[in-house]
Every structure is written in C-alpha cells, then in structure tokens.
Amino acid sequence: MKKFLKILSVIILIPLLVVGSYIAYVFIDFHRLPDNQILEVEGQGVAEEVALKDSYRITSWNIGFGAYTADFGFFMDGGTESRGFSKEAVLNNMSNICKHIKTYDSDFLLIQEIDTDSTRAHHIDEKEIIEKKVANGTFHFRDDHGELTGETGVIPLRSYTFANNYDSPYLFYPLTKPHGATQSGLMTLSSYDIQRAKRRSLPIQTGFAKFMDLDRCYSINKIALPEKEFKNKELVLINMHLSAYTTDANIVLEQLKMLYEDIETEYARGNYVIAGGDFNKDLLGNSSAIFGVSGGDHSWATSFPFETIPKGFDLIAPLDKNKPVPSCRNADGVWNPKTQFQVTIDGFLVSDNVKVKNSYIDDTQFAFSDHNPVVMDFELVH
Image (cartoon, rainbow, N blue to C red; front, side, top):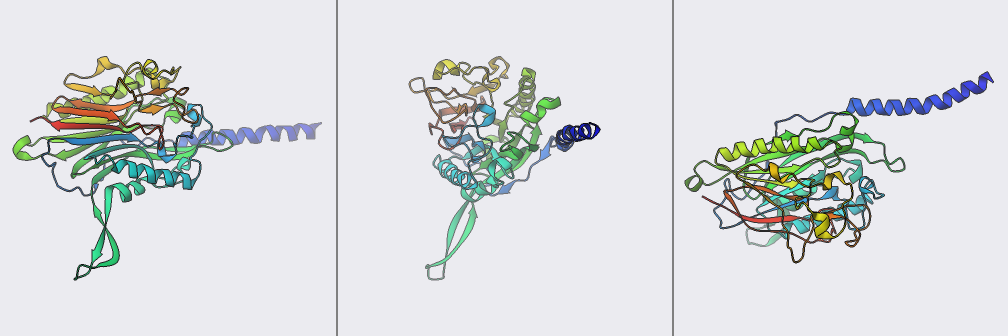
C-alpha cells in the first residue's frame, strides 16, 4: 500500500512540477521593451525632404503575421489554428502581400504585425522580406557598351524603421500545436528620408492578463518638409497597434491618453500629424449594423470613444455607404461575409493642417490577412 501511495504521489507531483516550472518560466521571462527607445532608421528615400506635391498617399495594413489567408481561423478568435499552415504557405502569402502593397504606389506605408522570429510564423523574418521586396529595388548592371552583364544590384527606394511591438515567452497553448514564442513589430516606410524615430511603450494590463495581450507600442517617425514653404515644420507619422484582448476597459483609455499627449505636442509645434494603424476598436461605432453580423462580446469590437478625440484632430475611418467594406474580420474560421463578424478598426487620426482628399478600404476579400488595407490621399495645408 505504501509503495502504491509513493507511486501515486510521484505521478501527481511530476505534472505539478512541470506546470509550476512553466508558470515560473513565463513570469521570469516576461519583460517589457523600454519606453522612448530610439529606433534605427534604415534604407534611403528618394530625397532628404518631402517633395512638394498636390497629393500624397499613405496606406496602413495589419498583415496578420503572414498567416491569415481567407481560409485561416485563429484560435484566439474562435478558430482552430495557432500557427500559419506551413512555412511555405507563410512565405507565399508574404510574397503576395508585398506585391499587393506595391500596387497602391504609396508615398508612406504603416504596416503592423510583422513577425521576425516567431513560432506562429515558422521563424520567418518577415521584416527582411519586406525590406527586399518593398523597401528596395533591383537594378541590372550594364557594361561600357550598354549591354546587360547578367549581374544585379539593389537600390534603396524607401527609408524605414522597425519597432518591436512585443517579444513574448513561449505560450504552451493549444497543447497539440502551441502558439509558441512571438517577436513581432511595426514597420514604417517612407519615400522620403525619415530623420529620426522612437518607440513608445503603451500602458498594458498587469497580472496574468498581460500574457494574453502582450506588449504594445507605437512608433513616432519624423520627416523633413521643405523649409521655404513649411518653415522648419515636420511631417510626423505615428504607426500604432493598440491592445485587442484586454479585460480592463480603462487600458484603452490610458493608451489613447498617451497617444493624444504625443500628437497634441507635435501639433502645438506646428507639425503635420498622421497617426494610423490598428486601433482595435470599432471606428464606425456600429459596424454590426452596417455589415449585418453581430460582434457579440468581442472586447476589441467595442465602440471607439469618439468624445475623447483632441481638438484639432479628425478620425478617418473610410465608409462607402453604398458598398461598405470592413477593415477586419473575426477570424473564427474560413471567410464568410454572411456569417462572420466584420468591423472597421483600422484608420487614421489626422491634424487639421492635413487635408484628406480621399480615403477607402481595399476589398481584398481577406485573401492575404484578416485585415484589409486602408488607403488615404491627402495634402499638406500651408
């Protein structure tokens, strides 16, 4: 009997030790990236300052770590998948994403959820792919007689920064195919040289909830404007990815408060401010009614607090009333517009010296991501 009890104790103790060790690892390994981190500016634009144009184009797109084809359902949204279908599938989707990005012919790009070394993206460096396919171009060498030599080189086309949004410990769930460790971030690309940039760490929940919503940030990127016309002013691009799975509604308000303080500071300096990306809040306020499928109790689908928007700023959330297109779907399975919740959570906050000429959401039918790209044409009022 004593031997049986000892064996039983060991059988019970080993799983407890494993679980306890894992919990200890998660808490010990968790860390937040520093606030006000200076970002490295890479690449090179076509000019040191913004060229004078009647219209500029900016595109924002959450690419969903390259995994979300139209038939992908994510486990945290009610689907079954925790990783991209395969390494080859993610590589193929990233190639299609880059091809699609280039069709917009944008002066500026704000891209979110780019994984650099994540289990869920099969450890593919998606930043490197975007560098090669979007930030740089290929040119062909010719000899002294003008004949092609067969050799190729790379020419910079864009200046860019990368801000690591989160660097999370290994999530051992779902048990059959764990989500794993994640390194993901935000990439801002400009046809003109980014002069300087920094990363701001957003407030997040404390306790165990922080492991589900991970770290969050936005990056502030500054680009020079022509001195004669703009008198030492700058174009300020803020690339953001706010929290999604919060259980504390006050976190959203704290994140927005921090963002507002930064954009108001830049606006007070006379700068031109565009803050864009994934707000993870319903920017239309009634997406369930507009797109015809209820959002249920999704925390990331609650209405944006419109009353908090600072004076001098406008929220741009494109809506074609005749043919409404959402910016995001709930990835609980294969894309089905008749049954799947749709919402617009991607858009821009712009200062009133930025005149918006046109904005739209490109209806990709979620072929490449659980988000559709948001495009905005604008001019700078001076």
